[in-house]
Length: 256
View 1 (cartoon, rainbow, N blue to C red):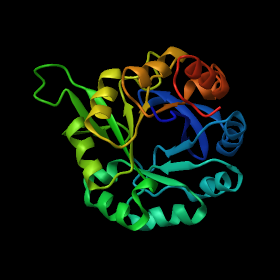
View 2: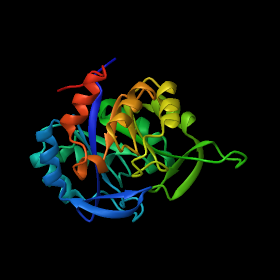
View 3: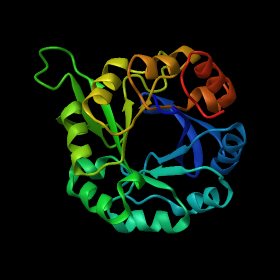
């Protein structure tokens, strides 16, 4: 098993880090630069910043806070939200962003994945997939892709979409369960495992981490290559070193 990454996720709205439950009921967490510096010092492997209202508000990523973060971080970081084309990606890379994450734009225009992968290299391209579970007899995929911060259904089956984005040139997948997001009841292991077993590229589990056991389950049961969390880290319930020590004790290779 390769080293598993522990990644804090920072959702940004109005240049502040926020956290909600199931993509709604947002509460303020802290300043993005202050948070980034703290996570670098704690030993996070990477950071993911998502401008969560950019797509909903039909605008690009606000670059001011990204610039401030880029000046201070000492580890790789990805930015997503409102990235519509390769020009938006280049603007972020020019500032110092390590990876870009696309979601709604990839669903609306899958060829963007191929174009971006060819232009910047697949290692710099993350395709974020947000998913939800549908009830039986709904005539929809059991595991369905949703976009626009979870507000819009697509009718796409998550596993089929994951395979497609891999084929088009995505370097990794950031998989978030809308149903589990912010609940602290654990990752959606069924969804994560289904995607991780369907592709060869790394899959990061996101949405629902509430205790140390959840991080381990995402790796051991659901086959995730990385675990991403927000609430537990932002509000000091679990620290990055605690998470890594726990995973290491469980036999999961991590960078200490």
